[in-house]
Image 1 (cartoon, rainbow over the protein chains, first blue to last red):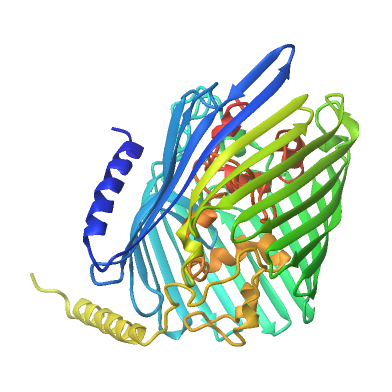
Image 2 (spheres, rainbow over the protein chains, first blue to last red; image 1 turned 180 degrees about the vertical axis):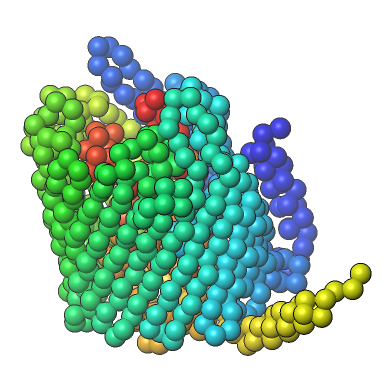
Length: 438
Length: 157
């Protein structure tokens, strides 16, 4: 029996068990989406896709002594027309499903089951256990371990290139509201040998920092080290300067040694990349809240790679009216990039991006319009632009239940005409509760 | 079996330290399970509107977590140092709409009625990914490197 099937049976069983426990707080959220998409592939070839997807989440709080909770989330899909994108007309997954016991002090908790780890340099999905707690003196510790959640097998291989288990953790020290230093690591079992790809084991350690020397200044970021290649793989840092109320100046710096950072990315044979290759990006954002109804931001980023450099700059304006029920935005960006970044054969990868959207959400209906255009300096597949216009219209049947429909029309280098539509039924009680999570 | 005196002493010291640490931990504050007040949907949340000091259980100023454009763009750095503070307001599924082992629908399609939300790959990203992937492969790797590779494998063979 597949894991997903077992998870559905377990979910039904647990739902009955939880609903019988009078003190438990049960919350279910659901989205049912029926999509209709027709693609004109050219030369008379057409595709008609009609997938139905059910997203389902369950959160049961205050179980047992009140500190135990259960969290489940996943989706299932069935194709009523042509296959959506993979080999099966039916598909699904358990995104996460775990029990959590939360202690009343020290931010301590234990999680067991399938969950995501996002701590320090570790960014993993596993079937296992995670223990976290703050310690006296400003210290804190987290440890995790378990079976790796595998992805789809690589083409022509019998694995996804990942090892079968992993463990790791993060140890941190916080000093007042000035400084936090973290040391984290992840160790995955030996990567399997692949026939067509160069892959390596996923093992790294890293240091992360948060520094807040004065109210207006904040530095946050991390550096990671690949223990397999014995090289620093990544620097990623953000510096914020709050110059005036509402005015924020941010500087970003990211640098990756391609082979060391992408070492365990089997799909692109990361372990086989040139050790000398580097990617670096530096940039900044200036954002200013003109008032509670308008935020203006401009940004710039410079990219450097071994075979060239590029620049991207632009700005966004976000507006909010009628007690935030009417929200609009407009944005423009320009990417100035040469032939080395272009779609093969093109002399330039430069393009302009323009976006305009607006939405109105009332207690009854909600509606939105979204216009997005990319305008290429040099045509891609003989097409000068990539355009998409989307409309959405919905109605709140109750506070928690809403029905909505979207339709979009696009023309782009991939499809001479792309028409998409969907109908969506959403049950989401989290918006009605006081302070409940979303 | 008799343990050497030095080992007994070391074990007693470790146990004593652990007991003292546990006793000390009981006095440490913890974050609340959830935010006590409902927050407005679709607003760039500004924590400092209400919090002018550090949150109980978190030794950081609340202003650090205000959802400015820069914060939204770089939220991974904040989440990586303490996602328990994120979890006060957000369910895990909020993150997993984009960050998951297997994403079924592009987030901007799933939430087509929320064009105000920052979502990756709006529009037809198939064309653009040929440019963006060369420009900044690390940005692809963060979400698709060790997870969520099903669509990639359809072409990248």
